[in-house]
Length: 258
Image 1 (cartoon, helix red, strand yellow):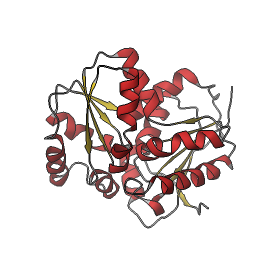
Image 2 (spheres, rainbow, N blue to C red; image 1 turned 60 degrees about the vertical axis):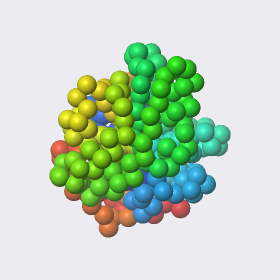
Image 3 (cartoon, rainbow, N blue to C red; image 1 turned 135 degrees about the vertical axis):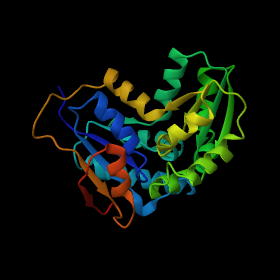
Image 4 (cartoon, one colour; image 1 turned 90 degrees about the vertical axis):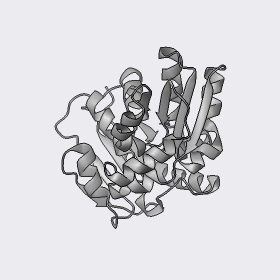
């Protein structure tokens, strides 16, 4: 048994969709979550800036002796994961590789859509990874820059959300699957499913949770374990949205990440 905590970070509230799924599968695990709300959004930043922010977040989580780190952010996964794996010994998991492996091993998709931030789509990491694993797959990418800011505001089930999703998905032909390539996007999953009822909507948080369930040295039950959620800027709507995602009040602390 390894009772050290799992470290996890995102630019904001989106990573809690991954947190939620992990707690369902692995309730005994302690999680240290960092929301880098001071630097939100990551999707419009340069690759070098994202790498530096990712390194800062990892350094913060390492102070808690975490046994692994999850980059619960599509943009940071696509642009910084390879670089930080060269620097740190701790296992670092992004949202792309486990999802691609899941699709390769379990599905027979021919047409896959990807919704993600502008930075993630420009990096082309999803498409490269999928085509390396499944050479004959057809990929349709769509930048959706409005969705993460809307999620941070809690606008995930109103008319604005419905109209925005409708506009974005006009781009896609008939798909076998649609990957939600930003961890904020599962907050819109219900609306997306209404518009695309015959498409398999892939929530990367669920994939990551299953991957961890099968691949990590699990913790044993301990009453002393308590999750911790930290933000780099408390002047945001994180707490309100977090309470809705987790269906319970959350205790959040303000930190400075250098």
